Length: 171
Image (cartoon, rainbow, N blue to C red; front, side, top):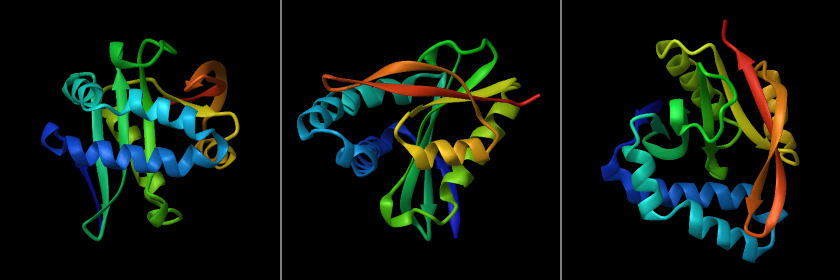
């Protein structure tokens, strides 16, 4: 049984734990321990996550498989977006699946949730940033109809990396 639930502030500790675990699982092998630690220590503090959870233009969703937390999604609209790609756009800032639950179609379900929310909010496009060396994620997004619309710098600690901006028109 799969269930997607909106995340609340009362689940802050759970959000922090899954954020750190999934990010580490995804990127530790390609980055130095020092750069990874510096990033995690800045990106996933209780204060930062509390602020994100309380932002009316951001939404988090947990996905459960057989009542076990399997991943999460973070969406942004309006001024919560990490950058302006298009005025009427929705950003998928984070979509992560725990390594134990990969290859079960859960990422696709979270993606569909993002499309559903974009449609409900009357957005004309959806976009995200994906690391240029995260080939499996890029392949997934291309399969979902995204095309590259730009790029920006992303800092993993002291290491400057390139994220590709991928966008999909909804109308």
